[in-house]
Length: 143
Image (cartoon, rainbow, N blue to C red; front, side, top):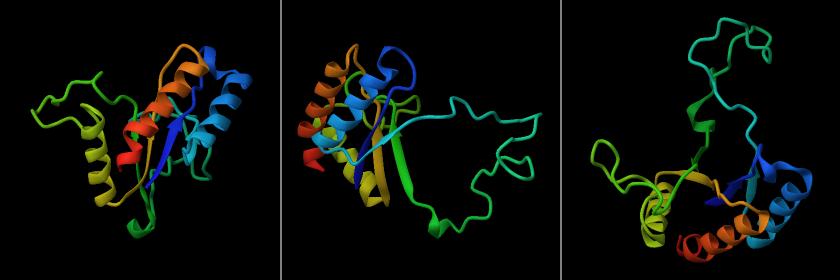
């Protein structure tokens, strides 16, 4: 399983200097990849034509063989900062302590998920990198 992180695309850490630091030091820490979001929202209904296809249709994975599609998962929040139970009473994926998160990651791996990435927060690049290091040592090392 590969592990990645989402780079900030807005706010004070989205400038070239901080982005370069986060990406290069993230790789040095041992993360496999970095993601940069380019769509904030994908609407349910589109009155205008989609500008990036010949037909104007949003592609939505049409025509792909499901065997050719790999599974990845993104955690925008995780750990003790989110409730352990979902609205339906089930355990919330990615909640709890490091051992619980590592168990969730192993379960995802066993389901065929090949890549997982995380959003780390912080006021400075140093704060974000410290969280990334701690997560690598306390969670990723147990998967």
